[in-house]
Amino acid sequence: MALNETLMEDLKTAMKAHDKIALNVVRSLKSALTNAKIQAGHDLSEDEEVAVLSTQLKQRKESLEEFTKGGRQDLADETNQEITIVQRYLPQPLSDEEVGAIVDEAISSTGATSAKQFGLVMKAVMPKVKGKADGAVVSRLVKEKLN
Image (cartoon, rainbow, N blue to C red; front, side):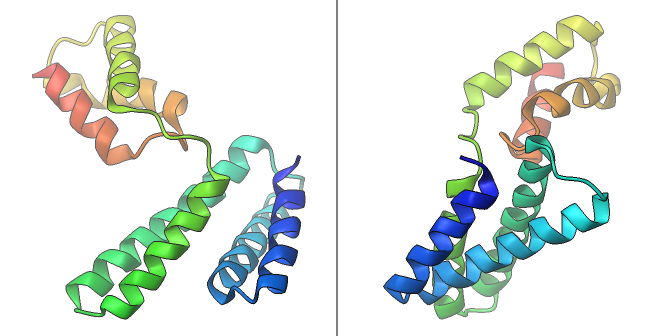
């Protein structure tokens, strides 16, 4: 089922269940996808949809961090629920071991031998893990393996 159809079904379910948080998140996701579609001028590919959803997830994680720093546990709890809902629509994230294997493959294919070639390895890895692994995790693993 296409992402848009899934979002519509979940929107209806959230309305019937009077789940305000889910309703707001699904509406937000639909809006972000629609805006991206208009901006692109064509229907979004699966990769483009994942990129939009990843951006939404990242924004919520940043908000969570700020709410936690500010001592706003009520908003942090709500944002945690939102993050859980957004993650339902994203592909299953890769484990550290899977990302490590991709990093090893990129290091051998690029011939990188030192930390000076960090950018080269990252350039090779990121397209393969886009939407499936956090950039900070990838960066950490590349640094570990190059040192």
